[in-house]
Image 1 (tube, rainbow, N blue to C red):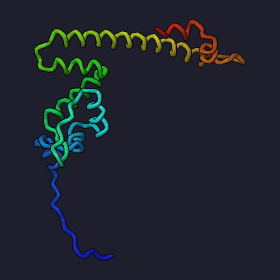
Image 2: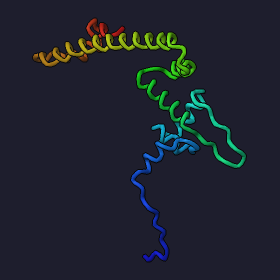
Image 3: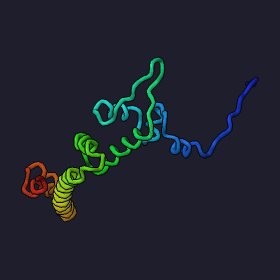
Image 4: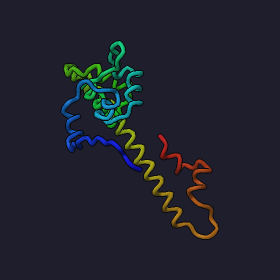
Length: 162
């Protein structure tokens, strides 16, 4: 196969860092990539009211900027800390930085939830550990202690539940 004409474009090793430095006038695809999410996530956040949809100039496409990238990164960071989208919407309402007490209250509530979940997980771990030990210690034709405990709703299995 013969190619009559090929135009080679110079390759830039700094293309991704160029994108980081120029976060204005972005198409939705480039915006999503810069924010570390996919286009569907951007559209989902817009439907949920977490991100405004920019105006669409007549005959053109919507453009996004650095503030939009920062906002999506904020949402993703809050999600990693366990905040729900409703809680994140409330945090975004407080994002001007002058509502520290309200933000702190939300964080304290989330911390309480996390500690409760950790306590539940510790109880579950203890019960599972006992059941695994019982399985390893079983002798003869005795049924599996784990299965028997789960089938019977025994107090051992029930104690891990809140």
